[in-house]
Image 1 (tube, helix red, strand yellow):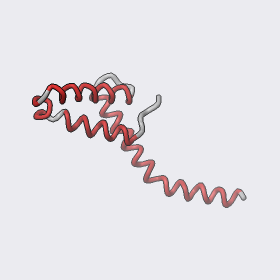
Image 2 (cartoon, one colour):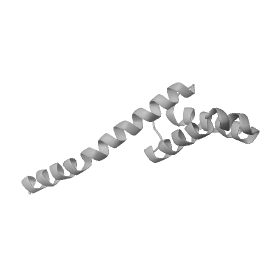
Image 3 (cartoon, one colour):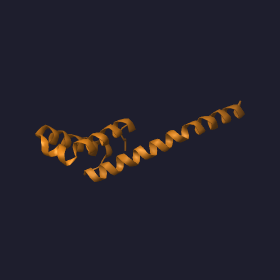
Length: 87
């Protein structure tokens, strides 16, 4: 399954958290509509059917993306070492 880029997921999760606050939802119809749009988009981008599963999937993807970023310098060093030995 293809998952949205971590930056997109982070923006969607942050927006969901902002528009789902009780005072935001009760204020205006456009805010409620935006929340429905964000819920739909999160579900589609994570391949899930409800917001709880979508948030869990998005947060897991963000967690693993951060772990991957932390490993990137070590992986680059490993790649340089392997290339140096192969040549």
